[in-house]
Image 1: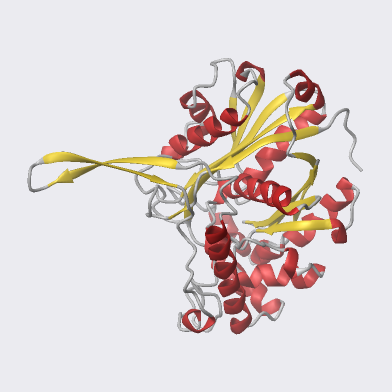
Image 2: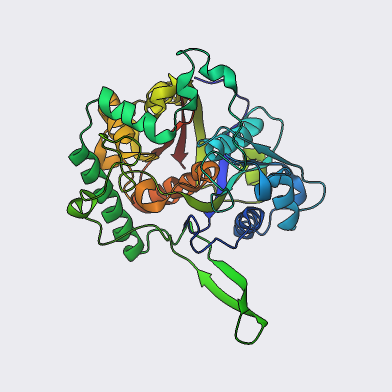
Length: 399
């Protein structure tokens, strides 16, 4: 059990639709996405004085280029928050968003703040390649065998996990097809409406015929990634992309994406002061480390610690958002811990919905909280593997 002096409650959790890399958000800046998410959570609690916000903590896995320059502070200012509200960008790769939520919650639990925002933003469209705006790997990594895993691409780590945990190609493709099926069904049923805030895209495009600039405007309100027609047969035709004789393909891997999400947390004192209705209580968070070359198994190191901190067991969980970095590692984690597949990603996962790196944790927190409130669940978990060999898990209780 953790030591704290007060609880932290989520009173608003919102996200943008998630776009494919170079998709509908290809001309949208990550700081604008963040500002929109921040405005959305503030709009959900109009009676709350924004000057009371102690800090805006934002996760970003590649805080460079358009999402550099402390994107948290820039996004907060663009959102119209008072100048007195600070902002801090943090980076723990794929768990940055849920890490931001946990850091915000912990400041409240320690009594150092009464109102906090944890968020995440990421545009993979602005990055020229997956390892960021500029790759600068330390040459010492290649001096011996013990650190080579640091330089592995994420796909190679998935191949390592698939081999070590004996996860076959057919099993991976079936998992991926089910992710798309669940996501498409959730969109058709309107299950994401409570968490998504629509985004108005305004693009300036050259009209070569007239020599003028044409303005195109449209509002998007649904995730771009899910394919309702995805099948095991279609996925089975794709070639491995990371190893010539491997099993990991583009179809059974997470999509590269753009997106943002934000979570507004308050203390019980602020709850009463502003007469707010809590959506959930932050119950615990933990991280753990594994060998870099099998980074996908990382949640196995974090989940037991988070459950112990929250004072619950695995069987108490009603909703699990297990980030589908790759089908291979997701299946391995489920198998290693004996997780109930029926409770995992009920609305689909990152293979279908996308994985905007540092934003994913905040986005999936919104999914879990709103999903449990809709279905009557009590405890939910957001968990993921993390590049260079780590895992993270956050626990939330519906109140």
